[in-house]
Amino acid sequence: MYFYSKQIHMSERAIMIISLLLMTICLHAQRPVFRTSSGTISFRSDAPLEIITASSNQLEGIIDHGAHTFAFVVPITSFKGFNNGLQQQHFYENYLETSKYPEATFSGKIIEAVDLTQPGTYAVRAKGQLHIHGKMQERIIKCDLISDGNTITAKTQFLIPLIDHQIEVPKIVNQKIAQEIKVNVKATLSLSEKS
Image 1 (spheres, rainbow, N blue to C red):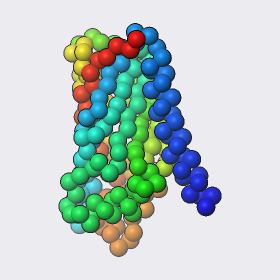
Image 2 (spheres, rainbow, N blue to C red):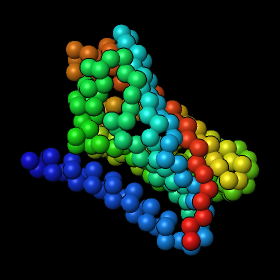
Image 3 (cartoon, rainbow, N blue to C red):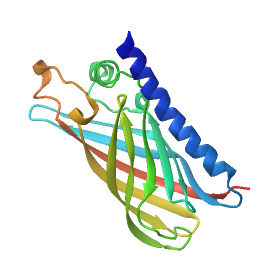
């Protein structure tokens, strides 16, 4: 019971962190922010006996240009495209346990001091907390940001080791699920002034 309560507390903590970041952004007058509610995130598990791919177009995110902070969230059950329905069910229920951990989040700060309101292509590092399956890991993820001044296209790809987020794979399917999952993200964020 204590373990389950602790897991819920961690999930609530992640939601609270994202909420606080969003409230902080909203409190700053005339600070430009970039938002998306339809970014794309996909993953690929390339194991010896099976390749599994799935994607979601429900990635939500915000970048506060003035503070160089960001927050992204995706509902785990929005991932579609598995090889079959049973595989999707196992992903939701057994591996990611979406009833306990319905979302994955990444929030933190852009290390480089770039002016995203100026057109250009910027190679940056996003440093923050990646929260998946109730486990947080600090990550630095390289990302390309392409700005035209009013919109940003963010692109990145990175690996997620299952062990980092205590995602356990039964031995019987060990050859069908990779121990490192490849993730691709592409999102277009539009500029909006907060007043």
